[in-house]
Amino acid sequence: MRMAWRWTTGAVAVAMSVAAVAGGCAAGNEQPADGGGGSTTTATTGGGGTMGVGGTEAEGGSGGEGSLCNTDCSAIEAPTCFVTVCNDGSYQGTVGSCVVVPQDDGTECDDGLFCTLDDTCQAGQCVGGPTNDCGMVASECHGVVCDENSASCSEQPADDGAACVGSDLCLVGGQCANGNCIGGTPNDCFFSPVPDDCHVAVCNPQNGMCEPVPGNEGEACVDLNDLCTVNKTCTGGVCDGGAPKDCSQLTMGCDLGVCDTTTGTCVTQTVMNGQICDDLDACTLNEICTNGLCGGGTPVTNCSQTGDGCCPSNCTALDDIDCACSTDNLVAPYLGGNGLAGNMFDIVAKANIEIQGFDVSVATSATTIEIYYRPGTHVGFETSSTGWTLAGTAAVTGAGLNQPTPVPVSLSIQIPSGQTYGFYVTATTSVMDYTDGTTLGALLVENADLQILQGTGKSYPFGSSTFSPRNFNGTVHYEVCGN
View (tube, helix red, strand yellow):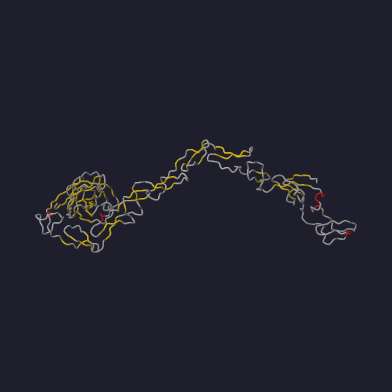
């Protein structure tokens, strides 16, 4: 078979002799349908009929009319990324001839190189795909290199300074050096969340994540599930130990100081009717609670030399030691240096005493002094009037700072030996002098009968401005009876 190649724009046309493709392409063998004079002695088989001898037209003889492109072009081998097709008029060249055209982009091919994979045809060219890594996985700070000459792959160190991740995932920002991953900054887990006080966050080198682990061994902790137990410490990741929170400072009369388990704060709880209570009056016995009030006790009538804190009306100093009373005072130094409207502080009785009055240090102006008290400490009750009793009010004209100004209020506040009472002495429109302290609740001054503790500076009356420790500047007048 003789073939002649002709390259045309967009296709390759192939001209073939009629003899080589006999019966193949109908467009090259079309005959007249007319029988003529009957001289024809051969018949040409068409697509649908036969031309008869003698000019008789065969029934249905269409002369082979049909497709324009029935040529079989499969015998013609095309270059890589090309295909041979019969030209149906879509390409330049003779219709019905074979032409060579580019294969569709993306058709698989082989560029003949070992170091490329998944090659595809692109615009008639076989283009290499991804680099062949021979199935190797490079170690850190190395890369897989393909060698075309030896048709093999090998590892080579990465460039120095390239970013890398070492075996310890808690080191971030490592760099390659001579094929090794070195350096990096430790992952800081200090601010990572932990479930409680007895855990700390540390980095797990296997995954680089901050994870909680037991910590703070022996240190103080707060158990959010047990707020009424205080002074707990961490033991093996558990907040353990401790003791029940003491709320006894709120216990008075028919009010019992208890801890609120939902908040951990001390609150008062009224006891039931008929329960025995103490009205803090040494001259009554066997008091009971009735609708939250402590009373109904039996008066003490027996005279005693043992010092029970009561001087019955039928007794004298000759037969009852508590009837032998004397007045005295204790001065908290007038040192000044600071001041606000008022001062809160605690008095601890070392004997059975009765607070009878105060001198204060107040500026030289007319003002009103108010005196409040409460059983128990003042600490924790600086901004609420709840539990405070106004004992007296008096108008004064101040003698000046660092000078005693008597407050003309007659008080009778009895404090049994061993008890603590909180006091709040304040001016309504002026400034009272006090001195900066060292420790809230620490001892300021004392004598044989009582102690005055370091307290708190306050705005009037129970405002939010609170400063501590602040030391009272003034004089406490009191009476002590018996021993």
